[in-house]
Image: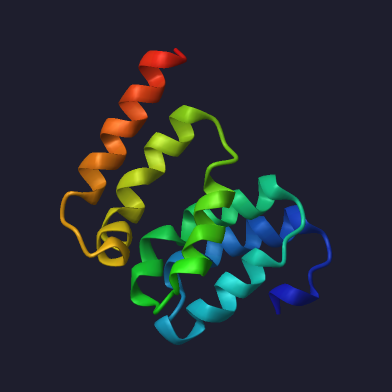
Length: 115
């Protein structure tokens, strides 16, 4: 249904209204739909809504790199807001419990260098 909506703004809004109720089996399709959005603003908006559910998917490391690349295209405060939503996935992908803490230290270092 969402693919039939041609306007990306409308598709993002519809997605936002449905995302929290997606059954796990539809999450791969939802992620594919988000990735198909050409406008990074709408893609990011929809992706942020789906983030809490992505840990349910067996997402490969390269695919997570693409997702993180999309997330990094926003301003610093928005990026910091979404970090807790991807904490478990980052720890799982790295295999290390201290990964999230290291990321927070890195963000702090960047903030100190470029306020």
